[in-house]
Amino acid sequence: MGVGANLRGLRLLDLLVPERCAACGAGERIVCGQCLAALRLLRGPLCARCGAPTAWPVDRCAECAGRRLPFGSARAAVAYEGPARTLVTACKERGARPLARVFAGLIADVVSRPAVDVLTFIPPDPDRGLWRGQNPAETLARLLGLEWELPVEPLLARSRRSRPQRGLTRAARRTNVQGAFHATTAPAVVALVDDVYTTGATVGSAATELRRSGARAIHIITFARAVRR
Picture: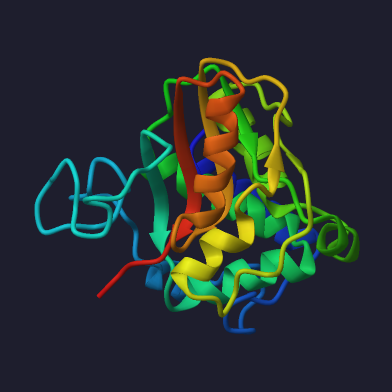
């Protein structure tokens, strides 16, 4: 099932429970056609390692060259800019499952199905997860599991609390999530799902723990990723 089927299902839901666009507040859909069209899809060319858009295909780009990355690749559906920022915030704070369906449909349309044994996800911080009442990363992973017919397993747990990453520098983000995750075992090849990739600090910390727990290859899948100018 691809993005078309997901969006058709979303339209049926909208007929029953009309929504306002989570990005602009107009229309009667969770994401209106204008905001959907404004999303910058990351189809390529891309950096083969970190998934950053590039002028032509490269193995390592200026963003990730010289960095030791604990994952084999990172891919995202859209650039984290414009309506995508508002949509990610809405999904985090409002727990909008219909938004997660849109995210999963776009990922399945833009990102190739990963050749992995299992999908897993970034677990929520205990305090923030309880306050929100849901985990966007888990919801997204389970929807992608249905799209790609892959099992989804909660391989990671939080070993300690961490501050919200928003507003922190790249170095502070890495320090903030260092040692924040724990895993007891992991399959050989894993896809790690989160809603957004900014500096890669959170997924990097989680991927490091998965490698310590037995994973030989980890691939990062997110709805959005920050794009350096």
